[in-house]
Image 1 (cartoon, helix red, strand yellow):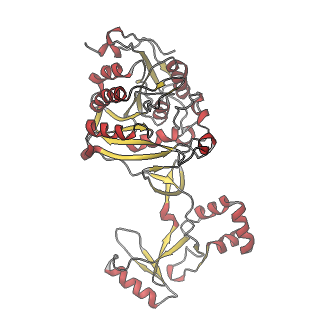
Image 2: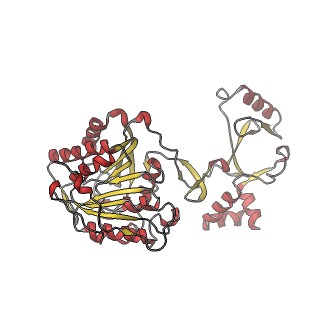
Image 3: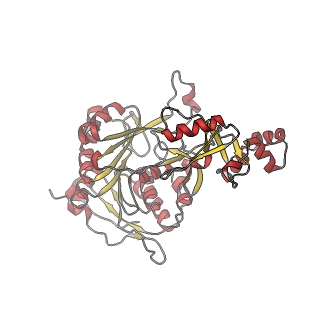
Length: 424
C-alpha cells in the first residue's frame, strides 16, 4: 500500500504575521495521528535527511495519564518500539543522531533493542538527566529516591558522526583564590595577593568586612571574579615528568628564584608562567560563552544535572503534567546534533517542546502526536512561537522574536484512510 498520500500539501498553513524575514522556515510539519503510518509516509521524502531524532516514548510504567496510556504488555511495548526505531534509522542522515528519553523501568531492555537496531558500536552515550529533587511524597519512600531518568544517544554511523564540543556553566571554582594586582605590567613586576584582599580593596573594605560581604552576597564576589578573570589565578604544581624539557628547565629556574615570575614562551599555545616552581593558572582560561554570557564552563559530560525543571509548568503556555520536558534540555540536544536549517523529528511530540525549541533555534521540524491535545496544546503552542508570543523557555537565551510557520496534517490509523486538514 502506497503511504505517500499522507503527505499531500494542505490548502492552508500557519504563517507568522507581518513581512517575511530572510531565513524564516515555513515547511515545518505537524501531523496528528499514529506515528507508525506517519513515519512510513515520511520515508519516501525524508529517508537519509533527518539530522536529529528525539523521542520520549511512553515509559511503560503501568500507569494511565491524561493524554496517553503508559501500560502495555512488555513484549508488545518492545515490538512497537522496534517497528518505529527501524523506520527512524532509515530516516536519519548518515551523520545523524538519535536521542531516546526513558526511565529505568524499560532501560535495560531498550538499550539491548537499540544495540540490535542501530549497532552496539553506534551507541554514543547513556546520559543521566536529573529531573527533580528528593522532595515531596517520593522522599518518604525507603531506599534510594529516584530523581533522574535517561537519554540514550545513538549515532546512525559512528564513523561519520562528529558532534560539536559543548560546555556547561558551573559555579565559580574556589581554588582560584589569588589575584595579580598589576596584571597590565610586565610579568617580572607582578604582585600576587589573595583574592579576598583584592576584593576588599575594590569594595573599599577591610578583609573581615569583605569576607562577610562575600558570604551575604556571593554573587557580588562572583561578578568581581568574572570582571577580572584575567587577573584571578591559582598556583598548581605541574607533573614534572609529564611536561616538556623546556618546562622542566623553567620549573627548576623558578624554584631557584622564588621571588620572580618567569615566562615560558610557546608558539602554538598560551605562554606558561611560573613562580616558586608552580605554574600560574588564569581563571580566564575557564570561561566560555554560553547563551550569550561569559561564564565558567566545563566540557559537557553524561551527567546533566544543570537543567532543572523550574517553572516547567509555565513553559509554552500549556499544561502537560507528568510529560513535559524543559526547553533547555531540547536546546542541548539540538545544539549537540544539528545546525540551523537541519531537519529534526519527534514522533512522540507530547506538548510540542521539540518543535518549539527547534523553531526558536531555526531548525526545520516534523512532529507527530495523536489525540485531541495535538490541536489544543501542540498546535496552540507552536502558533505562539511563530507569532513571537511565547516568552518562556529558551526564548530570551536564543533571541527569538517570532517568524516562520508550519503545515498541519491529520493521519488515520489506516494509511489509505488518511485525510489532511488546515492548521486551526
